[in-house]
Structures are given as C-alpha cells and as structure tokens.
Length: 150
Image (spheres, rainbow, N blue to C red):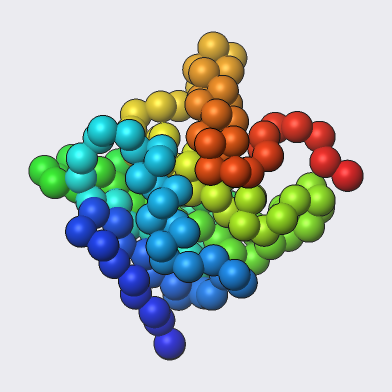
C-alpha cells in the first residue's frame, strides 16, 4: 500500500486513500482552528470503505462504514485520532451539492470538536456544536455546512 504521511509538531495526517485537492497543510489548519488552545497531538487518517467499516464495527458495533470517527486519547500529549472515510465524504459532498474541500473541512472540524470533548447527544449540545462548526467554517472561508444546498 502506498501511504503518504505529512506531519507537523502537533498534527499528523495519513493518506491511506488520497483526497483530491486536499493537502496535509489544509487538514492541519482545520484541526488547529477547531482545537483552539487545547494541546496534544492529533492524527487524522483518510481511509477507504473497508477500513472505515472495520473501525466502526470494532469500536461502535455498527457494521457499516461511517464518514468520520473520533477517538479521544487518555495519553498525555495526545488529543486523539480522527478516521475519515474518503469514498463516503466524496459521495456525501456530491449528494449535498457541496465542494469536497468544504465537506472534508467540516468532517475534520466536527471530529476535532469531539476530541475536545464536545458532543451532540441532546438538542442543546447539538445546537452548540453546530454553531461552533458554522463559525469555524465561515472563519476559514467555507459556507455554513448546515445550510441547504442544491
């Protein structure tokens, strides 16, 4: 398997599956914007359907791939890992009429907020998280990910 790994001091990006027009520095910028002042290394891995399905089955007991998984770390100096399924991200972007870069940025931001302890288990948490995601996306020059497209 041909894998490209790009890394900075705090964000490592692994492309097990390539994402068109998205670089490690793009991903690093998105992680850094969402994590704010929280310290700790983050690893973002872009993968295919089989790996995403296996991780979702192993850790969430759901036997299908998902677009993003976030794994918080208890290890000092590690914030956690993100796993992003490239084929699902591409499919969702097309279905929603979004640019792929915008959708992937949103998945990275969403996952990073989970690593920082945010969740959306109830309506209040979901509204707070969506508001933060929208603000971060707009600061990065992307449209609101929750507006209707198409």
